[in-house]
Amino acid sequence: MALHLSSHILDDRVIIQVGGEIDVATSPELDEYLKLVMNQSRPNLVLDFSRVTLLCASGLTTLLMAQREARLLGGSLLVVAAQGIVARVFRITGLDEGFGLRPTVAEALAVSVPAGTGELRS
Image (cartoon, rainbow, N blue to C red; front, side, top):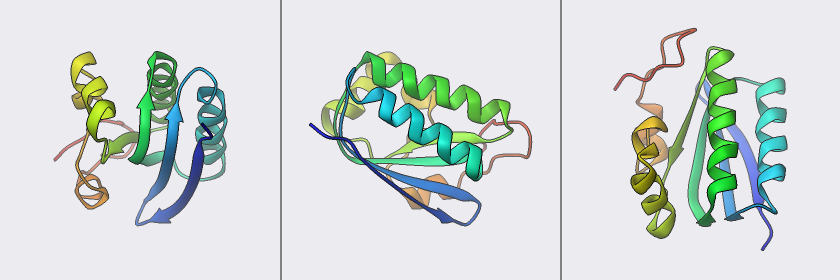
């Protein structure tokens, strides 16, 4: 299944809509897209997973590496609207808190990220 990616800027964050399956075949595409956005824009990313239907280990690795890069750049990476099996993957791995999992983009935008720290504050 193809991966669908698009983005727009809202406030001081880049909202990235992700759709489809994130697996070993599509993780490199997601990785390249996230790097491109971080290099061309701001490192404060909100990934909207409302249309993601599958997330495997390679996808989690891609997200962890992107989050690390965003933090090194003084930004953050949050995941929102993960549902069903995708939300379960985050909960089972304990990464729901690490990615600041929120139910909506609006709630993610309410989370402040102090400049240069990459740490989240509600």
